[in-house]
Image 1: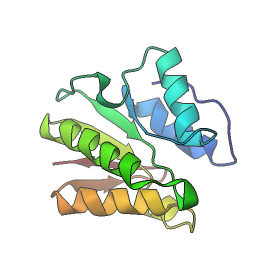
Image 2: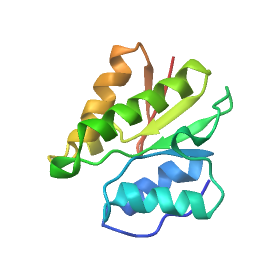
Image 3: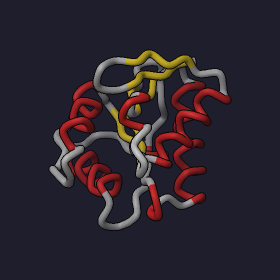
Length: 133
């Protein structure tokens, strides 16, 4: 669990994901919420990206840039880290279908497609989705 810096009107939905997480995965471009959340996690001692070895106890909040801020490199790095968590028996926390259906949320939709393609199971809550193999 870690506290996010408010960046947009959507920070409150993202805070709900951070509230259940013990790690963070997000490769954001400068000035994005994804990048700010990475800094928040680091400042609070939360393991981030590829700097930790996931276990079955890992619950990773994943944030992906959308729209014009989404880069293939950052998306692929996210997929690699998410896959490491899943292969270790951990879980990843993402936007639920309602939130990822917003126009700007292209990165979250691509993440959900990736998770489905690797056989992850989605448990949807009113605030977020939890994925596991």
